[in-house]
Amino acid sequence: VSIKDLIGVSGYPTFAGCPRELPEKWQAEGPVVQAIRHQLGVISGKAHTVQFAFGGMGANRHWGPPRNPWDAKDHRSPAGSSSGAGVSLHEGSALLAIGTDTAGSVRMPATVTGTAGIRPTPGRWSIDGIVPLVPSLDTPGPIARSAGDLAFGFAAIDPLLGGDVSGFLGVLADVDVSDFRIGVCDWYFANCDPGVAERVHEALAELEKAGARVSSATLPHLDDVTALNEVGGLHIGEFSSFINNEMRDYKDDLDPAVAIRLAAAENYTAAEHLRRVREVAHMAAVVDAAFGPFDAIVGPTIPITPPKMADIDTPETHLVANTLFVQNTVTVSLLNQCAATIPVGLDDAGMPVGMQIVCRDGFEETALGVALAFEHVLGTPRDRLGPSPMGI
Image 1: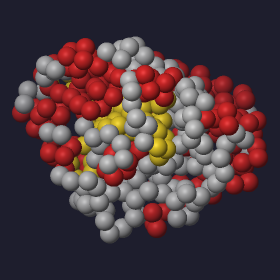
Image 2: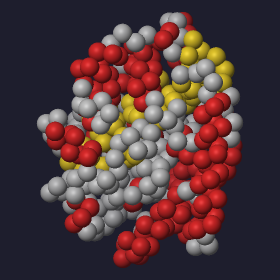
Image 3: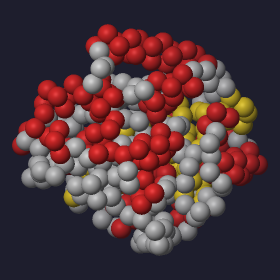
């Protein structure tokens, strides 16, 4: 098991993507790592992260971004902020990767590396022992080579399932695509690069042919949530509070791609933060009611091809790409939903495309059941995508 370098592991210094290690208290193991040890999991090492997890492209001037294994020629984004998680699965150093997800940082690395991942609803998995970004949105989450492996890893660690892997997998053994009502939300298909929307629609056609009950779905407030994120969401308030109160000595070493986002907090007030918290809670309640008859609502996980790192090497170009990258994942986070992602094909640039499976808060078992049922029809990532050019 690889562990994101934001999560405390005894005996491993925690850097959180910084050029020097954090105080020793951040090595303390929380419930997620303790659960892995209880299951006799072998921790193979720490995986790269964007500094303080504040970014979705994988950029890190201090440690360098890992290479995306799907492009042997150009150094493309491995996504982030759990930038080493999906890569560790391809290099063979891990069978399961534990990242964290605030705005998409489990789902995005899983997508661009052609693997499967899930964001649990915040609060289901403890964030104790994890360096915070936005505590109200933060959650650890697993990434694996297939939906089957993902369900296994989730059950082994999940506190509600109590480590009953065989029992949970037994429940999922007979899932069928016809068991679920699937909504397709057109909003998620905006701004797609060539081949992204096409691969998702092709997969949906295969699933319908296999008996899936698929129909159009509309969710309110997605534009409103996006607009809120573009002015800092809840990130700038909660992260600026943490770094100014606990990590002030590290501010001078901030990666420029992180510093440009933190700068937006200079005139941010507590009153504005509370207003945003209330607004997000209201929108989440409205969207939950709008889920209606659907068990899950789907669309592309990321609308664009992971860019070449050389094309986003300034804070400004990085910020533009990051905004597009998180388009479909950050809405899930701010609306307090859970979501899984599975690969469905390669886009026109030969990079993996993910389908995001969005469920109501607390319905992780449904998200995993849908992912596994889809995988039964579409094949495992290895079946559907083939081997990555740089992976095992």
